View (spheres, rainbow, N blue to C red):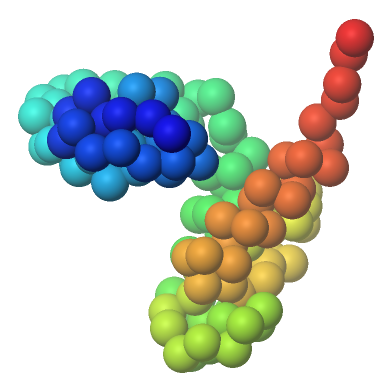
Length: 123
């Protein structure tokens, strides 16, 4: 059991991210992002684009394909079937138009699975 430094509630250790409970940390994240200046936000976006050009290129190609009608975004998640505006998940960025249409929770799970499969343990 752990006590949250922000709200003071005692919760299980699984409910924590650093020294704050998940709810307080989520609220703090929202407040922090609201305080960021537009210049800082622009700089971070630019840094992300420079760090991951293949991701940005794939996202742009999917957006262009949707706009031109080459790709059609379905109205439901491929994985769980929930009715939503699904996000395009790229299992392989070298194939930009090969996307799986997933809801936000399923997309997060797919990304975590892809990252854990790529992770290499070096003792």
